[in-house]
Amino acid sequence: MKTIIEIQIVENEKQRREEIRLISTDILKGTITGGRIRLILTPDLFGKIFSPKRIELLMHLSIKKKENVSELARALNRQFEVVYRDLKIFENFGLIKMVKLENEVLPELIGEIRLPIIA
Image (cartoon, rainbow, N blue to C red; front, side, top):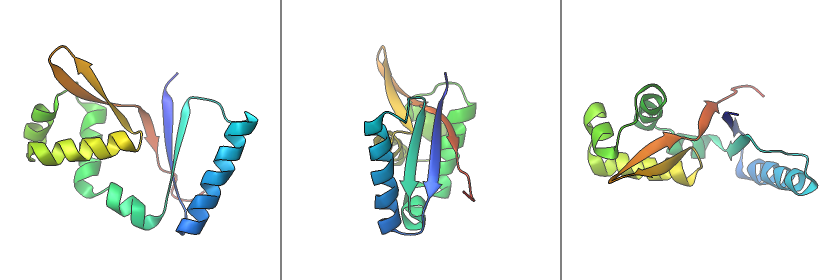
C-alpha cells in the first residue's frame, strides 16, 4: 500500500496545535490506521518548508530515477550543501527517507504528497 502524505494548512498556530491534539486523541483511540501521514501547517510554516526550489526538488524526486545527493545537486544546478540541507528538512518532516545503498545514500519519497487547498 502506498503511503499518502496529506498536507493540511490551518489559519494559525493555535488551530495547528488543536488539530495535532485531535489527531493524537484519535491515534490513542485506535481510530487512525497506518498508510497515511498528515502534516498540519500554518501558511507561514508552509512557506518556510516549501520554497519554489524545494518543490522543484520534490518534483524531481517523484519523477526521476534514484539519484544520490551529488547527482541531484548537479541535475538541479544547485550546491550540494543546499540540496542536502533541504533533504534533511524533508526527512525531519517525514516526507522522505534516506536509504543507504552500498556506498551511497539515496533520498526516497515516503509516499504520494497531497495538498488539498480547500478542506
